[in-house]
Structure formats: structure tokens, C-alpha cells
Length: 451
Image 1 (spheres, one colour):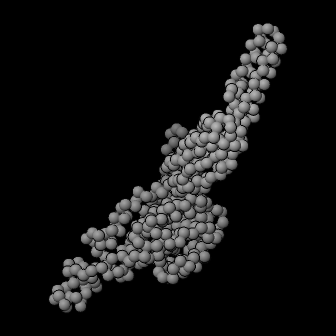
Image 2: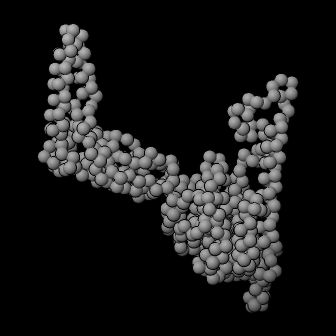
Image 3: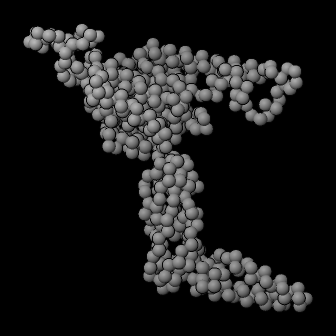
């Protein structure tokens, strides 16, 4: 049983006879009356065993955006239901309102709207709805959790979507929808046209030239239906935090943008989430469903502390396609020790495929190396700075910080050089810079006929 504020207020009235009459008997009598009234009120409340909850809500919601659903409260009993309902979602689902008042006559149903504004990706769940049914006097209520399980998958925000229109425009240029024509090998024949000064002489079609008695060149268009394989590192490399988010979130943005771009170009895209084992896969996503399938798969990806099994990647790619593919290893190159397994597998991949490796840099480390005085110190560290005539000088702690940051950047440069010598293209940048850079690498490979 639960009591209302009205019940508490009536109990407080018992103070009046106690003070005025100088005796507690009057107050006790009043308390007895109020408690009896509350008990009768509970007996007159609706039978919660006859209350049903139905949900009408989306299965997916994007983080940072709002989604709406409805909660249907059905009263199959013989007494009217005057209730407060509280949906028991996880706080990160961002549902509102937390509590709703409903009045449902006997044998009828009422609908209340629920709005979701999730602020964490992943799978958000609820087991039921707490219903508190009050009696006619509103003094006390019955309470029961009505079973109504539900699940809401919160997909990544896909902030890098803003880069998609410009990259699609460049793809249309490559595809011959504008005046730009491709030169190179490994592309599909499109048409013949007259030779223009500056054209590659290797593109001249000598048979057509002999027939027309004028120089004619072939034009090409990018091949379609190629395979793009994206491997997202969900191991310890993705657990580090950059700009108040895990590196895995930056990895996810790169995978989403590349998947949407490659599918729009007519290629088939495969995704694998990898740590010490393959945690999830998306096979052969197309233009119509790539964002939804990638988003739903990556929504539940969480970084672990296990080392990523990069040795399994060649077999994973072979299971997707036996022909040449564009393979993107979405990870981070920090040091030789941390990236040794990834570097070891690159020669096997680059012999058959075009390989791109990403490396997410921490902007705080770059600011440290540049000697920024506000280099993400805590307040206590800033207050320990020397004040007075020598306040402009760096302290010993600043010198060590800067040296450590420069050492970190040098290690990352060294690892990137090793990856390039192994035949891979390395894309490096801040978390918001890496996704468009990966898309540009894909367009360059498409233009050069390396897919």
C-alpha cells in the first residue's frame, strides 16, 4: 500500500485537537479515523490484476534525436482506475514523462505518450510499468509492477553524415555524370570520344582511330559491385577516451560513413566487429539498408580489454570474397608494442587487397606537445604554477608533460611509417577528422582503379 500527500496532510491535522484540548486522545481519534478511511479507500481502488499494459513504440532510435511511443493502459476490471503509472526504463533511455496520471473507466483503455531522447547508444530495456491505483478519496493506493517488457536499440548518432553529400558528388563525377573522365586501369569501359590535348596516350583506341582517321580515346567508369570490408576494432584500442568519448565511437563514425558511401557507389559492404573473436557481422549490405544494419550492429558494440586478434583478419576477408577488395582496419596506431599484431598481418593483406588503416589521434596530446599552457591540466595543477615575476616559465611538470606528448607522437609516426612500408595507406587525424579522410581514401582508390 502507498499513501498520498493528502493522507499525510490529514494526519497533520491531529496536531490541532492535541494542542487546543491539551490531550492526545482527540488526536489519536482523528488518526484512527484517517487510517480507517485510507484502508477503505484501498479496498475501493481498482483491481490491478485486471490492468493490462500495451506498448506501441519504435524498435530503433538514434542517439541525440527524439523518438515517440505510446503506452496503452487497459482496465478490464469493474471499478474505474485512477492511477499514476511509471515506466521503468533505464535512465539513459531519456524517457519522459517519468510519471503519468491516467483515469480509465471500467472496461476501457487510455493512451499516454512517451518521448525518448537517449543519450547513450546500446540496448535499453524495461521490464514493466509500475501502476499505483488510488481509491475514490485519493488517500491510499494499491501498487503493482505490471509486466510489459520492451527494448529500444539506440543507434550511433552518425554525426559524420554531413560529409556524405560532398563525397557522393565526387563519386558522381567519377561515374561520368559530369565532364570528368577517368584514366587508369582496372575500371569498366564506358565510351569513346575525341582525343583532347592532355589525355593519357595509353587510353588511345588505335582500332577506332584507324576507322575514323582521327585520334579517339577510351573513357572509363568505376567498376561496381566490388567488395568493401570494414573491420572495427572493439578491443583495448577502442577503450581509450578521446574528447569525452571512447575511441570506439570514432571508429563507428568512420564505419558508418564509409559504408553509406560505398553502398551508394554500388559496392557491397561487409562489416565485422572484432576483439579476441568476431563479435558481430553484417554481410553484403546494400544502399537501401546499410545505415540501418550497420547502426543496429554497432549500437551494441562495447570496447573490451582483450587484445584484438588481428591474425584472424585474412581468413575473415577470404570468407567474404576471394577477389580483390578494399579493406579498412578501423583501429588506432599508438606504439609498436600495442600495434605489433596489426603490423604483422598487413603484408598478408596488402598482397591481395587495397588496405587502409586508421589512427585516431588525441587532440590533448597534440596540445601538450605544442606547449599549450591549458593542456588539460586539472585545477589543482594550475594553481601550483609559480606566480610572480617568473610566472611565464614552464614548470618541471610542464617540461615532462611536453616531452611525454612528443614521445607519444613520435611513436605514432613510427608505427604509421611501418604500416605504409607494408603497403597500407594510413589515415590519421582527430576523431572528427578521420571519417571524411577514410571516405577520401576510398574515393582515391576508386579513381585509381585499385578496387
